[in-house]
Length: 239
Image (tube, rainbow, N blue to C red; front, side, top):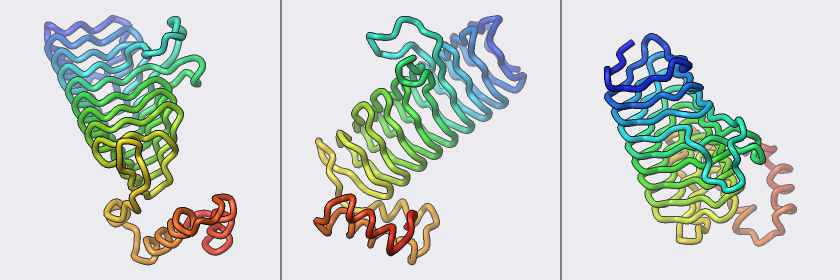
């Protein structure tokens, strides 16, 4: 274990022997750091926070702080983080709240760039990217492999489907369907994230089925329930 002599590691923290803790970093008493995790200089990991293996917390990041929720009164809530995530400089990730289920959760293989924010009770899937200054408000659910461009924001309680792409400087005020691109200060659908689908290894046939489902649901002017029923009847539940 490589712990810089100026770092403050609480005696109650569970730190794997392979971890690295940089100068002036602070590790709280309820923190658990998995194998190969590195915490950079001046970073803070506090609260009831668990990080899996191979995570990297860069300098000045603040992980596991109390939620920015005026109803929070210090209830015992948690932050659970998977493996191989990167938390870049000055990003913030907060504990859950009792009213939101008590757990903020981040999957594996995510990149949270500088000054990004993950609020209380967010459920962030695997392989997601939050570019610089992207912010997720409380209770947001983000499925796997979603990309948020710089200076984006997602409103409380919204849900973003897998492989969606949120263009820079967009505001997500309502749920985003899987595979779609959203753009605008009050984000509107701007088509499919075809580049993301190709990178995810989808075949031309699969992408074609997604395009047809998109056309039926969002471009046919049919009532949503009727459009979804048609998609399921013609393609099954997962086009």
